[in-house]
Length: 127
Image (cartoon, rainbow, N blue to C red; front, top):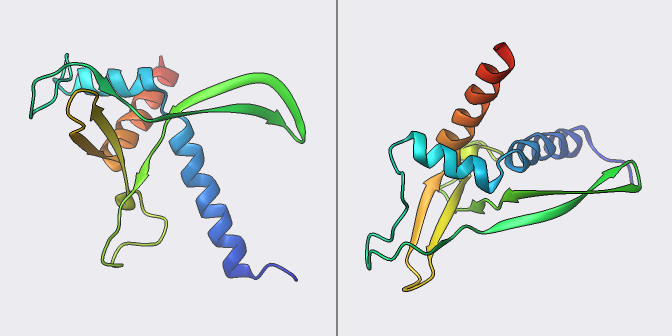
């Protein structure tokens, strides 16, 4: 069955979105938090400082061939909405920090994090 134009556009938008997600390494997320005034992340409930950041490691492919390289990125979490935002909006996603002591989850909206990342990339490429 042939892919419809709408399905093709939806797939392209998801690919663009995931390219953005895959650009955020755990180190870059830590730099984002530090630059926003959070030098040490701690749980607001129990004050524990051992926090987990859900992340994914993926092997890099060129075509169908594995390159032997791996990338690790912060795994975004999808949140439900009332359906007013566009289907592939960053407003549907956030990043979690999970306290390893009590399990409390802090959530950071993906939009400001990835906007910071894009602006940071532009600044580094301008130098």
